[in-house]
Image (cartoon, rainbow, N blue to C red; front, side, top):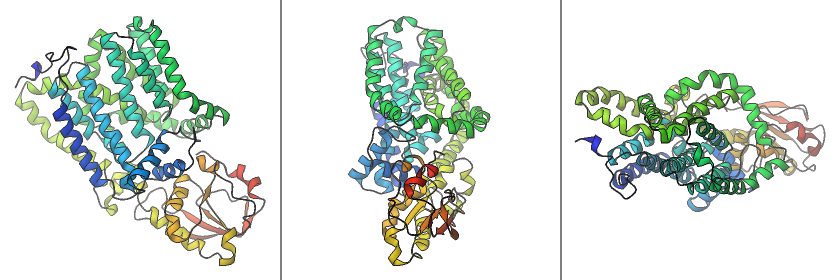
Length: 494
């Protein structure tokens, strides 16, 4: 079969028809696998936080805008408060991302075979599997960024400025999830100014797109402004704490986040886009984005959605290269299969918990889904050492939102009250009433300066070495001041 002929125009737009059948098959299989595995292990610490945040609806939170917590709330309301129910939202974002990647490939002239190739590559990439398995802000970001890229490609292909409002709306929605989308916008803007075509910037429709995007983003921006922009504090902490490590690992992680076997594909995508003057800005936006992230000390995975766009661009030339000889396909067959197996093992909960340790170095998020019910049971043991007559005035305080979220989710079955924490938005949902003057169960590394008579009463033991392994749980006799006076000292973002 001559794959080079697949890109012949088959529709009035001059593009090949959409490969609906093959892409549908990919997403059906993707959905089946993700759903079958979504109940293994348990909630991730971030998911536990989102569940509580969804019970406190607002236009913003200390570390994020409102979209992902609201998706979490909607998912468990409709499908049940279980990992399977919550992760319907994650699966949906993963499936839609794969469809959008195939649509980008089509928009760039790919035939049906190359569109299917792009869909398979996106569905099996490690990063997509990770974020489609568990709900995170990155799950939504992956979808939003690819949609923004799709609209940008449509704008550049058609030169129809009426795509600006669609692009602005997508950015506005993305800003309700994470403000990282503004880095994508700035990278695209810089690339357009450098590589052109600059003419599409001279349009009233661009103004309309800006106004629409800002209108959608405004409520979350206003919330952050009224609360002192805590998201910027969190971002600054990430850069300060992890910036050097992020910069060192940035380039190597670009190679492995999707899969090493896909590196030639997205490099071919950069070359293909650069050779076409219409799309040079898309090609240039990726290195510009990388420079921005390196300067800010951002996490390497922030750039991954653009790699999916480049994979879409490289699908057709890669398929042409493979079609030129059976020997090429044979040589790449075994490495490709090995990369798929590695991606699945690293990203999805297919291994027994006791065999996870080697995987955690590549994907620590697997470990953060293990041991939460046992953790709550350990806290319960300490709690029930408090005399019965004192428990209605006793308090549980945790050092991070994962611990607090786990107690909120599983504590009812152990007779535990709602927990308190100074971490992220849990700090906004406290403090305990000043009338709570009985003993305090202090979980983790929460500050002890305001507490009296603290004794380590238990240490958490997990089947794997994750972040909660070795967490110490203390029982304190009380506090040195009312909770309202102590709370500002317990408030922290990282």
